[in-house]
Length: 225
Ligand SMILES: [Zn+2]
Image (cartoon, rainbow, N blue to C red; front, top):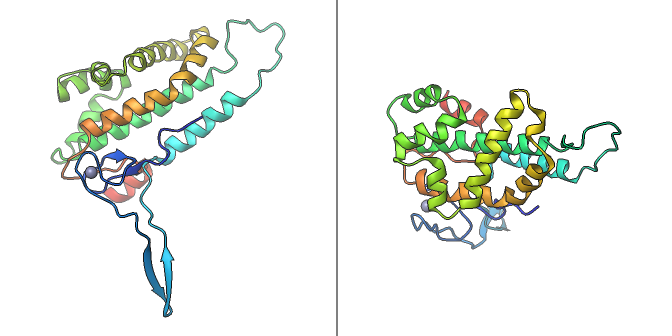
């Protein structure tokens, strides 16, 4: 499972996520040259290192999706074939998407005065409102339309299917997530994340305050206290 996060770095100047030496958003360049540091009078050459972009929660959830996708199907005589044995893949990926959107808004609202950003997120606690009304009020377009505007039509369509199926599932319809949706989710996994990264760079960069995507919720709490 190829991760779009591989090789991606976080720009310390504008908050963008990219995989090249010069940030495509603000032009900030990082040096690939190794550094020489002296320890006890001896020179040590240290390879150039940059902050990776992937958040810890994203890494954990992607690892779990990989484990679940490789799990063999158990023989369960009597279990209706319409019930997917791998429905957790859809639930895990939707969880990942919600976590990413939470970070998205925290970065996008970083410059709002006081705790207005937190207040807005409290007023729109559900992902449906955050993808539609809150997104529309902030950027005059819905998340889905923004994703499509960047060329991710199939990904926007699949995310909406996932959202409907996941809602039906948590409201008592276990058949809402079938094997076809699980397979489609795995097929779209990489491109959905790429689309999210494109929108993050479009909407969450260039702020005076920067909330790096790799900063975990726990890290944000510590930083803010
Ligand atoms: Zn930058």
